Amino acid sequence: MTALSWASVAVFLAAYALIATEKVHRVAAALGGAGIMLLIHATGAEAAFFSERTGVDWNVIFLLLGMMIIVGVLKETGVFEFLAIWAAKRARGRPFRLMALLVIITASASALLDNVTTVLLIAPVTFLVCERLALPAAPFLIAEAMASNIGGAATLIGDPPNIIIASRAGLTFNDFLVHMAPMVVVLMAVFVGLCRLMFGRHFRHDPERAAEIMALDEREALGDRTLLWQSLSVLVLVMAAFVLHPVLHYEPSVVALLGAGVLVAVTKVTTERAIAEVEWPTLVFFAGLFVMVGSLVETGVIGALSKAAVEATAGRPELTTLGLLGVSGVLSAIVDNIPYVATMSPIVEQLVHANGGDQALWWALAFGADLGGNATAVGAAANVVVLGIAARNGTPISFWQFTKYGLVVTVVTVGLVAPYLWLRYLL
Image (cartoon, rainbow, N blue to C red; front, top):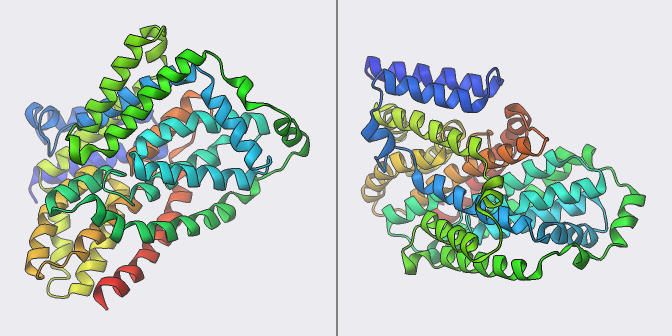
């Protein structure tokens, strides 16, 4: 690697250390790192802001913006309070039952939508129900972020890396259902058990509050019914467009922005109220992170690491597949899994051809990238969004508070996928 490559690594590690230790605000660390990358010419304006491969992923930014506006309007209807009471009553006020219900709903929704959209919708419900039952919201939010990443792995549209892989490999929606979804069901069952072990000390059942919840009528929480039906109609159309992406060919960001625009235009909610829920610090943090990671791609750092890992297992299909799974899990925990997959997919394509069209490599890349995103607070978009929402609602979740649980979940889930790949494709 060149001197510029090493300099970009040093800048990235310094920014990452500041984010992890929280010595400075994560937005300041990301923007500072991005600024230095531009200053030392590790990347340029063209690559940072306009390149599809190494620049800011505007599809992610505008998807978040559009969905945040839709959620902001939805909050005005009282529907999240309705769902919070409904969920608490179904769980009969029992904390673990409630968490299990919420993570299963989150994982299921993430398979049909994308994981970022799902956490944007489920987080407001979580805050309300935890407030009703006097429970700490942080464990629930952490569990939901991880469930969204696991559930999103099941389908082509559930997690952005899957879309990149499908495009490069020519895989269909049904291919992901056949090869990824069965294992995701197993992983979710294991994850629910892990939630019990990791968060059990937070599950304090309060019979009095549970009785109060059971006595409530959730329908009373609903306010403006006209606004509710307008909002739900737009949301259903947006969700349908997400699912029909392979047919309609509209990017999720376009769909979200159109939905947000229509909702603001046809309802009585003012623009100021609609954008009040937008997590601007989260969007800016993403922009800085994309520039930093893009600089590592631009200077050849990520490509060099990926090629070295692949060359170390050359000629041995078992080692190549399982090594790719492990490397993808580790690197996706450190850098965002979207640029990682964008960089790695051409290399995997060459390996697939060299191994006679062995599709197992694509599934190893998908599982490693999707599940590795759970390891740290910045490993996946859903994690960053959840931390931003938590901070905004007065329940800050630190980098290490998330990561200490994320590392356990990633090791267990990736560890379970290894024998699955071995038995299904390599044995």
